[in-house]
Image 1 (cartoon, rainbow, N blue to C red):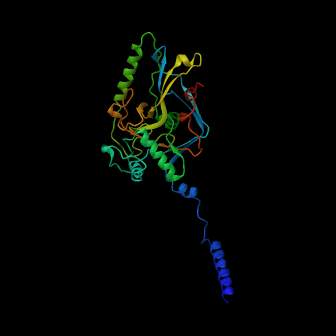
Image 2 (image 1 turned 30 degrees about the vertical axis):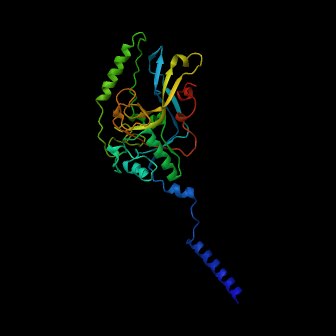
Length: 302
């Protein structure tokens, strides 16, 4: 008697499950990648494929004197997906709470406003956050290269480089031009934080690209002898990845562990008002040109 009862129960269970499935009551659970993708609420701006011309950052020498290099061209055949705004204080605090990011220094340790950018951030902090966000969402987040940042900034970013040609036998001419440029930069410094969008939105739909929070990039500082570049093809120069390029109203070069740019860490010129960051989402798995490849390739002279 028990065997037919078991068979009947099994048959009824199967019928009930089939009916529930048809009615939509039983659904296949999402795969882990689908769950993590759904949890990614980061607001991104998608830029179309294109190319950007820019003056490569770094120190460039000719005949032993500093000069401005020729423009380089960077192609972005896959376009770019970048955060609309910088990472907020609340978002960085969540990473700290998860013990994936280091607490900030005392002046910013309690920052947790969701409407203000996280500042007092080093390149290492920004990189730790990108790795944590990638694990949390299942997407690959990273810092942009300098070229990618310029492409995203569009007309909101003015490269205030010295374009004049000077007599190499009289270096004082360029020094005077550099002094005038630095004086101009000092007049525009305002370190007071504003809520997101307080410095406007550019034509690409990104906020505060040239505000008073400079963005870390993944591009390393370089020192290039242009005489060697144009000559025998010997090593053009050296790359120092302990110092990274930061981008804002003007670019600057900051040691990767520095959080306060006003502490004397700026390698040259007027320091940024604040250091923060925004990330690129890159699910292609390919490394950006700013993080791999030869120095000549990065400079567009390979």
